[in-house]
Length: 367
Ligand code: PMP
Image (cartoon, rainbow, N blue to C red):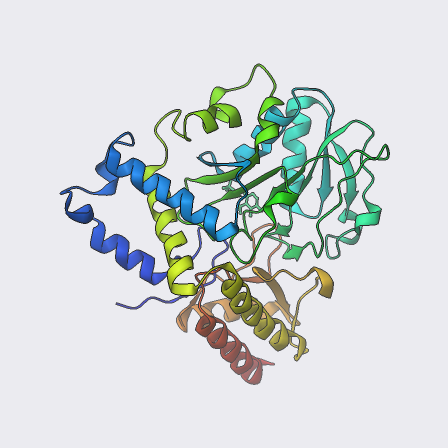
């Protein structure tokens, strides 16, 4: 069996150790004589799996007690709707910091559902290659919250600060963050946020699961008439089991949390490894005139590194030869083209070393 290096933006690489454990437990989960996939979500075995996953996540991110952790579904895209439904019940307007394609989709959904959304600052004018500064963010007087995408997965633009989210009248509004492509890549001060959400299929586990971390006091702000499956309060009260949850994805997420805790040593160690991985790739790009990355240095993403070749006619060959060398999924998002290497937690440092060596070899031969 060969496992190639997988740089996919999502669904992304999973730790081999996690997949091996899942394989061992596939047919007979810990002597119970059935697979986790075949368990009732109400059974004591499954509830123990679900509770352990939450406990490990809380430990990894030091989630304060006044935050609820929800394991829900519908992708991060569903949260583009769930957030305004849950936070605009007392009036006010959704505010956004727009730094790329995913934030723009969240804006469109809020506009679609509530008729308006205020863009408090945007990097659209520079093509999303450099993020606005905190001082550029101008919230509307009726801002109910500020939504940010700290890491734009397609553009590879990361915020280098956390917005203060203060209105002109001095009121600090809840910060809502789409952390789909950075969660668990390093430490996180959860107490700075009102709501955090993240689709699972990058740093958490397989697709089909979405993690939401919401501060207790925000559970009372929901719009009355909304789908009950979107309600953070209803989800929190039901232990994320209003209906059948994505049981197997939740179990695998638990295995990933366990791996991050025990095999890696937690998110601080993970952050060091991730910084090293990204550092090596950006160094290789910067050292060459053949490759380039368009993002302002202060906003470079450690998780998603887009790059282009000086001669775009060579892109097809680059991707074909990379794949033949066991370096998979380096094609950039269909909306932007070029190349993109996603360096999530489960992508080992050896994968980056192999990519950098390949890039150097390709440049020598074709540059
Ligand atoms: N937000 C971000 C930052 C993403 O990267 C993605 C998916 N790549 C989404 C939202 C949408 O996630 P989903 O496909 O799970 O709805």
